[in-house]
Length: 447
Image (tube, rainbow, N blue to C red; front, side):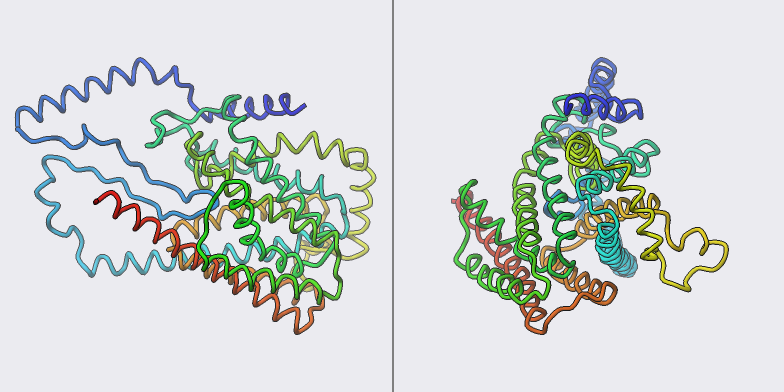
C-alpha cells in the first residue's frame, strides 16, 4: 500500500512538472558548458588574468536548513572586469541603513506571523479534536493539506521548486523518483510520529500542558544523540538539563487536569522530533533539499505514508465521525470568528463554521506556521533563534489560557517558566560548545 501511494505521489509531482529528468540536461548542457569554458579560457589566456569562475563552483542562495537555521547566502561572482573594484565598498552607510531597517521589519513580520499562526493553530486544533476525536485522520488531513499547498506553490513557481537549479554540494538536479522517496521516508516517518502523537496529546490534555512537556525536547535530544549517535556534550549543556527536567516534572505533577496518556504522547512527540532533527542532516546531503522545500517534500512523502495507516486505524469511522462532527460544530457553536465579529450574510454561513472548512483551515495553518518559522529563523542569528523559540512557547501558553480558559496553578505557571528558561540556557550552552569545537578544529588545521 505504501509503494502504491508513493507511486501516486511521484506521479502527481511529475505531472505538475516538478523535478527535471537528468537525461534532458546531459547532451545540450554539456555542449553549452564546454563552449563557455573554452571561451573563458581563451579570454583568460589573452589577458593573462585568471577567471575565478572556472575554478570554483557557482554559489546559489541557500535556504534555512531543516531543524537548524542558517542565514541565507548571496551569490557572489568575481570577474576580470570587476576585480579591481572589490577593494572599494560598493554601498555607502546611507544605503546600508535603509537595507538593515528593511530586514528588521521583514524579520519582525515573519516572527509575528509565525507566533500568530502557531497560537491560532493550537486553539483550532484543540477545538477540532473536541468535535472530531480521531487524531489519525486529523493528522493526515493536516499533512495532506500542506502537501497539496506545496505542490500548488511549486507548480506556479510561487516557491522555487526543487529541480530547477543545481545544488552546489551535490552537483545534480533534484528528481522525484523512487530513490528520493526512500531517502525521505525515514525522516518523514519520524515527522509523522511527532505530529500524530502531538495531536493525540492535544486530544487527551490541555494545550498549556502539552507546551510544558514539549519544553523537554532538548533534553530528549541530548539523551538520544548521546546514546545512539555517540555525541558528546559539555558539562554546561548537561547542567541545563536540570531546570528543563525539573520544571517539566514539577509542572506536570501540578497540572489540574493531568493525563498520563497525554504526557506519554507528548514525550513520544519529543523523541520523534529529536530523532527527526538528527536524521535531517543526512537527508539534506542525500537529496540536496533544505528549508521550506525539504519540509514540503517531507509533507508530500508523509501524506503518502500516513494515508494507508490512518485508513487502517480509523477509516471505518469516517462517515459517522464526519456527520457527528457537523452536529457538534452547531451544538457547541464552534467558529473561526468570535461572536459579533462578522456581519450578514457572512455570519449565517461562517457562524458556526462548516466542519470541512474548519478542518481545511486548520491544516493550512499547520503548514503555514511551519513555513514562516523557517523564513524567520533563516534571517536570525543563533542567539535570536533561542530567544524566539523560548518566547513562542510563552505566547502559545498565554493564548490558550486566555481563549480556552484552561486553569493553570501559580506553581504550574512558575514551573513552565523554569522549563522554558532551561531550553533557552540549553541553546546558549549548545552554541558555546559548537563555537569551542570549531575553534579547536581551526587551531589543529593551522598547526
